[in-house]
Length: 129
Image 1 (cartoon, rainbow, N blue to C red):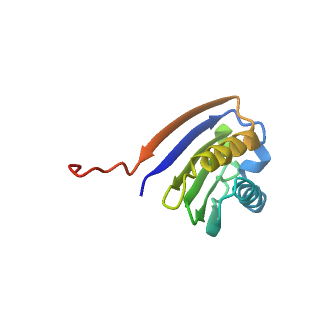
Image 2: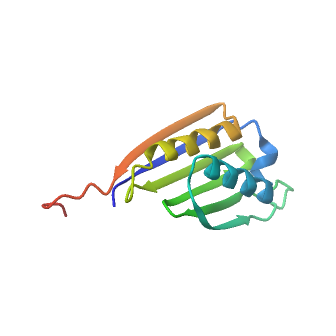
């Protein structure tokens, strides 16, 4: 049950067109997951409607992985993205694959600023809870 949960908050993303291109973003995230050696078993993507002032809507989406998931949310109005990559280590240590996927996604958006966090999950012991 243990695993690695990585998150990143990206600001000042240079690839602003990708923040509103649902199909392009989905293809890029799938390719990054495949390149990292993770197994996509499902996905769902949603593009929010444009704002009344004409500002394009962002995208929320996720890939379901055999190893767990990757989720992201874009805010084109502030050139920002939040990323969430979680892998379980049930049949082997997938931590390097999670790190490779996160690194590829950060490169994809080319942020001016990126804040990263990591959390080791599922380290339950006999006396936990």
